[in-house]
Image 1 (cartoon, rainbow, N blue to C red):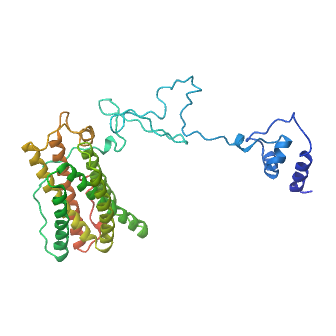
Image 2 (cartoon, helix red, strand yellow):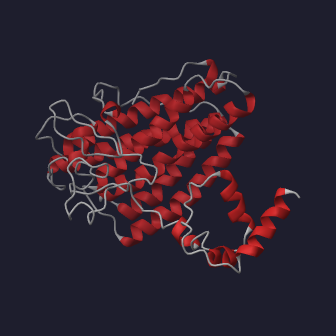
Image 3 (cartoon, rainbow, N blue to C red):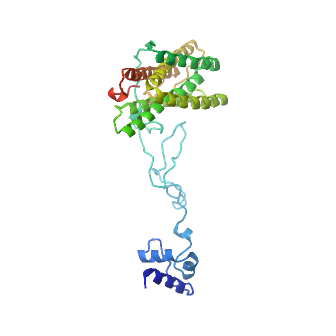
Length: 346
């Protein structure tokens, strides 16, 4: 008789016999018992005392790997996996611990104080180069260059009308748009590298670094001024249109797309220069620099909003140079991989 028939016969026999003294099987039973349980129906197995309800075998998983306060006498042990230093905003918080036991990393500054930011790490901080030339301008020579410059100028006109001299909110709007091109370019180069089984010359990392740097600008200015509801709605609309338009433009002509970003960064330099003028006039209060800016740009204690605008403007000047350089590479008939990418060039 085969093992299947034997198991079936045994299940039918045991369904009419009470075996109170038979110990309940655990999930760690041997292979033969496990096969038997799978071949029995749930009702037969329970009447025979061979298995327990399914909920006993698979109790609800805990949402965390942290110890249960009830089992620890209501006390939490110091140094558990879920504790993290004060996070963004300065409030004490606990990280969402994974069921798989992946604890959040613990980091400290050079002085031994806890690292409070999760959006960037100590090795991603840097000291900006403020000596960069802010007046450099790429003179348009070709039709595509003139079209790129006209596109950027036409985008600035409604922005000037909407924000006027509210440069704090203007900066937030600018950064929500400026962080898109690097991500789009990095994504498309990444997919191209995968399709062609080739290196990218470091340009994927460069463009993604640019997108992250622009996003950090936004996170910094969010600490300075809060956008109103209609400004948030405008961001949603502008970002949706700009992302799709830039994505399509990069597919059609990368040299045009990079030139647009180069001119966009030139306009950003102009906007931040006007921002500094308003601070110097006293129209905009020169408040202390946000804590996130002190750590990200390694600014000295006591830095102010003016110092933040200075380093952000320097970042935009570096992005201007990188994108004009990328466009020039394409104009010369080469792919970006032919020219080493300026990694770490903020």
